Length: 108
Image (cartoon, rainbow, N blue to C red; front, side, top):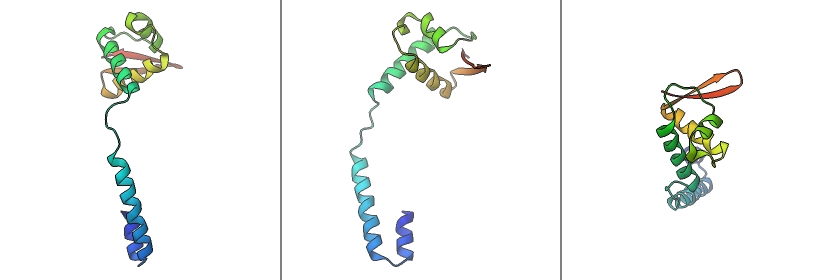
């Protein structure tokens, strides 16, 4: 939109047509995008639910400690655990406490 305004101020009809055609292309491309969650996002949400249901309250634990204490999460990767914990931290359900170089998670 700002590019179109610049082209109009410069009285450049060729640029106006070019910008309009590019905007139409981007809009057409975005119309076909899927809004459903990815497989990875679904798995991360499932792990987050398991963590929230099974994590003890007011106990500092690392991602690995959480993973080892919950049998349903033993086979999951540490990256998946960290992603799920990050989601829970962003919603405020779990706090991230950093001590020295370790990151601990506490269920509030």
